[in-house]
Image (cartoon, rainbow, N blue to C red; front, side, top):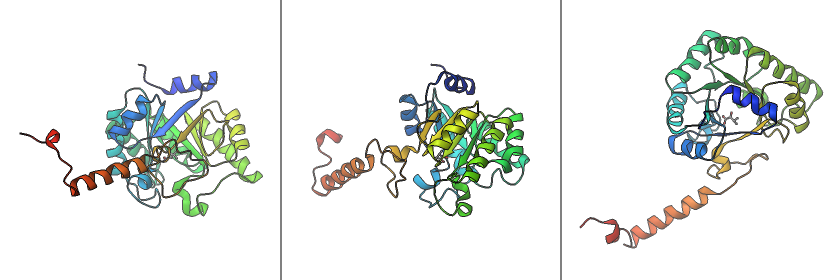
Length: 266
Ligand code: KIV
């Protein structure tokens, strides 16, 4: 089973084969996502919201990402493992960003890193790429800038903002990004961006014209139910099934039905 590489992803764009990406944050779910045939496993800083219970991605630390990326890397055989660089681990200086990206690759086993933003991070991206670490860009709704954006809302609706986003996508490609996530932008804009760059675009809330699609695993499986953006499709409701099973355990213990002889030692 060949491992997914940046070269393979570029070929998929060229041949029109859709790229699949899902997040994972731990060993068992990484195994399941890989077994399902997903091409890229993103250890997203959405970790902060769907696993650690914060109300944004901002509190996520480098330590959190190292631990969870390492767990995911141990569970994946085929997919490419991409680790998100958390807030304030790449904004201060390109040197510090390179050190932190290097840690995610060297210590945690990521094959690439993802960071958010356009023009302000171009020099940083070049620095990381020059060191041999593939970088995935992220434009549109960039959750680490939530306070500046004024909420989780669709980006690039106005002509000026759309033009800026298109320019930034081309600049990210020139800086060396092997792929770009487009989050919460109109479908027509995602289509134009996808057609104007030679690297694959991966959409989340960006419509059907991207080269690939990504969703947050805990949304897809119905585990995270605090809120549901329009673009989220729940493919199952694991939360409901899990709570039902756990209630059954509580009931059986309380009523003396568990453990029976089958689950006990003589
Ligand atoms: O953190 C994350 O899960 C992400 C995806 C939404 C693309 O960045």
